[in-house]
Image 1 (cartoon, rainbow, N blue to C red):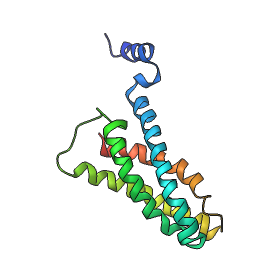
Image 2 (cartoon, one colour; image 1 turned 30 degrees about the vertical axis):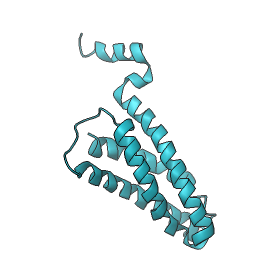
Image 3 (spheres, rainbow, N blue to C red; image 1 turned 120 degrees about the horizontal axis):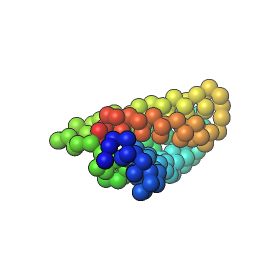
Image 4 (spheres, rainbow, N blue to C red; image 1 turned 30 degrees about the horizontal axis):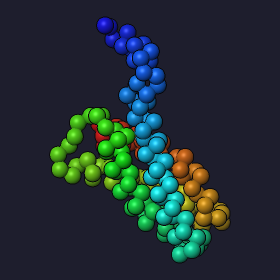
Length: 147
């Protein structure tokens, strides 16, 4: 079979998830959805009842710490299963935490802009944050952490 025939066979035999990146992306979205629910379940009560709108950004690190723990297990065991090699020791975990740090920074900036600068309710930053951050972290995870 030639290299040109393999993509055609892959599409015919298994649908969209037969392509490695499509399957990873589908699993990443499901795992990310679970992490998002966890993040929101921690962030919203803290932002609304503990810190208040004026200090909602203080809830972000707590929510991210819980969500990143859940996310690492889901992504390493399921989303990127079979993708690339496995680094010894804690190198992969450190890289994962670094990628999540980028996500944390993005969420914090979005939250600060929405609540502090624009005076929006605490739930507003969830919308742009939960659309932008997963896209950025998927590609960083795929290219750097789980390669």
